[in-house]
Every structure is written in C-alpha cells, then in structure tokens.
Length: 426
Image 1 (cartoon, rainbow, N blue to C red):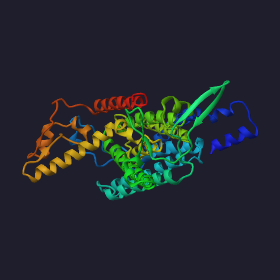
Image 2: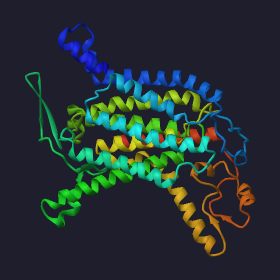
Image 3: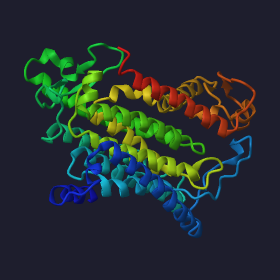
Image 4: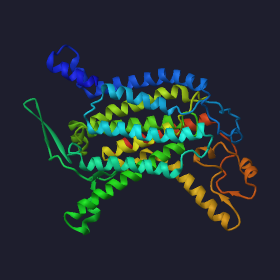
C-alpha cells in the first residue's frame, strides 16, 4: 500500500530520503518496530476487552503444577494480537504484488482462522477437545497444497541455482543461471549442497521424473506445514514458551531468507538465489516483532495466552517460509524443540497403549509434551494412574516453568545458530 505510494513518488517527484524505502534492510527494521508496537498497544486494549467479555482460559488444571500457578481466568485467543501485528505493517509496507508476500499473508489468515475456530469451540462452546482433529489436518493440508501448487505454477516463483557477482571497472556485474522452476533444495553439511527431489525418481526417465519430483515436493510441503504447526501447538504450554522459541526461529529464517534474496550473499555462500524472496525478510521481521511485542504480556505470569489461534499460525509461518526459500530440510535442526515435543507425545502415547494391552501400563516420561516432564513428580503421575510405571523419572527436583521456558529458549538459540552455520559447514 504505502510501498506503492513511495515507489510512485520516487519516480514522479523524488525528494531526499524517499529511496530509503527501496532498501530491504530499512523496510524490514521499520516493519519489525511497527509490528512490535502494534502488538504491545493493541494487546493492551485487547486484553481489557477479553476481560470485560469474560473470554478466558477455563481448561487449565492447577493440580498438575507443583507451584500452584493460577491460570484460570487468564484471557485466551491472544493469537489475534500476533496476527493483527503481522498483517498491519505488511499490508502497509510490503510489496503486495509479490507472490511470496501473498503466500505468507494467506498462511497467516488461513491458519489464524483455523486456530480461531478451535479456540472458539473451546471457549464459547465449553468443549475442551475443540475443533475435530481431522478438520485441523484438512486445513493444514489445504494450505500445504496452496503453497506447493503456487510454487509449481506461478510464473514468478523461480530460482537460479548459481549466481556470481563480479566487479568490472567499479561496476557490479551479476551472472546467473537461467530462471527455472526447480525442486532443488538445500541439504546441510554437504559441499555440493543442492539436492533435487526429481533425482529420486530417475528410474522413471525423462520427463516423468520431474513430474514425480514436483508431486513429491508438494506432498512434502503439506507434511512440513502440518508437522511444524502441530509442533508449535504442542510447545505452547508455558508462559512465553512458544512465542519466545518461535521468535528465535524467525530470526534464523530471516537471515536465511536475506541470503537467498541477495545476489551478493547468495554468491558468497554459494546457495541458490530466489528472486523476490527478499519480501520474506520483511514479513519475518514483522513476525519476530509481533512475537516480541506479545511476550510483553505473555511472559510469566501471563496476562494472555495465544491459544491455537496463535500457535497454529506461527508454526505454519515458520514452515511455509522455509519451504519458499527451499530450506525445509533445515527445519529438523532449527525446530528441534518442536520436533522433540512432538516425538515425546508420539512415543508416550504409543508405548502406553502397547504396554497397557499387555497388562502393565508404562509411561516413558512423567508427562508430555516433554516440557511438562520437568515440572511433574512421579507421585503426581501415580496419583492419577496408580497401576503404571515411569521409565525416565529424572531428577526429583522439579523446576518452575520460568526456568524450563528459559532453558528451552537457550536450546533454540543454539539450534538457530547451528542452522545458520550450516551455510558454512559443508
């Protein structure tokens, strides 16, 4: 919106300072600050509105918390604050004719609506199960298909596998391979680190392997969107946990997107160049700013919870942005905390069901997702399920959720740094 206005002013009647809006770094900083302020200011009034309407958390069970933290009555659906704080600056200062910006905005709206329906059912219909799980999966699959098919068929969604920047007589000359639609992706720790999904289907011959490669890529995007958004949803169980972890992941993805959208840095790190992906930098700056502003109210003791409206959305944003810049195979490293949360639930559920059928139920962890394991005692588990046994009991010392949250943040910082370092570690 405003970007188009500034672009017109620069060509029609240029005046000092107007060219600043052409620089990605300047726009990203302005968008990030605007998102942070929007989140803080709008969040303040939104919390007041929710309290007046008595729209609050009703499903929390304080008996599971050894520190007796009271969370009933805290307003929920705070993900609306995050979504508004992302959309407002992006609509104002983003390139709205850029396909990647449009995909990120669509991701925010679609998963935001999906999460809102889940929170609405839990809060207003008093149904603690919320939206049927199959509807959530259907929404995530639909978004994945939209993203994958757009990358396949949109004429502006292209990439250059290699780019070389030279300086001849103080003039920058960019040499790059042709714009192509490709199923290539970045794989970590490998010198020639671009792999092509189509090569998996080489046995099909030309041109069928490329068609199969695109089908595989689209289905992979669907899986990544569902996996990461559900992982973020599981991670949202303590004050500031999901928002802090996601902000850190957003910063790492911002760096990767900046490298992918710059010919200079793409040449330096020898990564594929994706024209137009610099708008992902602007979007992710708004994403990080919105989450940091939300943490103003969401850190312990939380004044508002993001709910599924927020957790599903932020997970989807992380997944889609990684897929757009062809860095989806780095997500198991970057989103290691989300992966651990999901695996802990899967392992706990499957082992418990299997051993219970054999006559003696076994819990691998005291409680899942894994962050709850560290604030739950064996005695609490046995009170609720006297016939079970716990394999990993861990320390008898229980930790307050603030310590657990901060430690998860530290782990995510290390994983984010390591993800960025994969650009050099080959």
